[in-house]
Figure 1 (cartoon, rainbow, N blue to C red):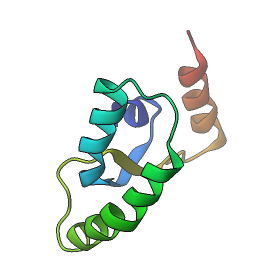
Figure 2: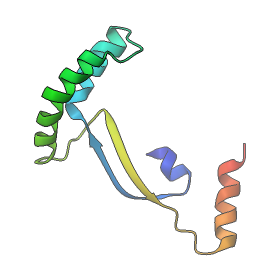
Figure 3: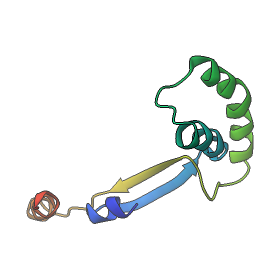
Length: 92
């Protein structure tokens, strides 16, 4: 989220999701070295883990997750302010 703030956005909302996806991702990609998705494993994950994850995450806000959604707002009050913000983002 630091990159969002560094780009001069105010964070309106942020939430992790796919909490249960961390373990299979770590096992397959980090330890197993997988670089491509196996359609059969994806199908099993979608049929078993996605419904469980949705059920859990509809009841609690996950403290961690494989994915993060961030909604930001760039509150430029004038065109000059917007140009200044853009210049800071594009410099070096």
